[in-house]
Structure formats: structure tokens, C-alpha cells
Image 1 (cartoon, rainbow, N blue to C red):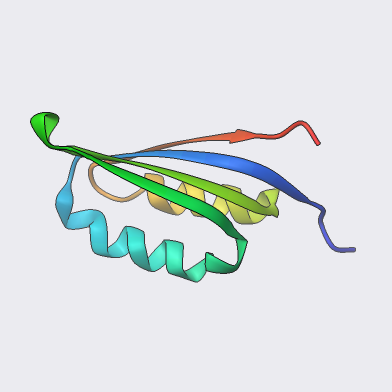
Image 2: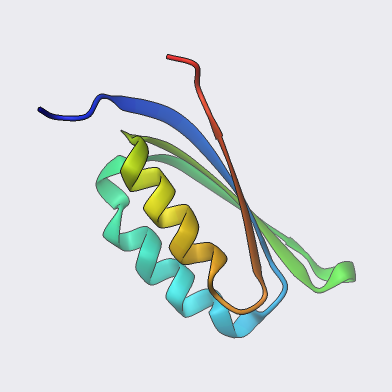
Length: 83
């Protein structure tokens, strides 16, 4: 049985610029589920903040969040819709 998709927001803080290439690769792998993406370079703090909106099965969102969170200098939190 196919898992129902849920809307989710991933909040990503990147403190290690060297992780950017791998972040983009992982996001490209899940591009079919991405509704929107916003990146904000916060230069005075030497970090980047990325918001990703997904409409995907929860296991896809969880797997992406987990893979991103294992990258050096990357912090991730996911928020899910109730439906």
C-alpha cells in the first residue's frame, strides 16, 4: 500500500560551506517532492539558512532530513502538517 504524502517544512542551517555540494545532490534526488525552496545567506554570521517545502511520504522526508543532518556543519529540523 502506498504511503500517503504529507506537507513538511525542512529548516536547514549550514555552518560548513563544504557541505553545500552534498546538500544540493540530496535535494536533487528528491526534486519530485519539493514544492519550493528558499535559501538565505546570512553573511555576517557565516551561515546559510535553507527552507524546503515538501509534499512527500513521511519516510521520504525523514530519510532526507536524516541524511542532511549527518553532514558536517548541517543542522536540520522537520515540521509536518497534521493531515
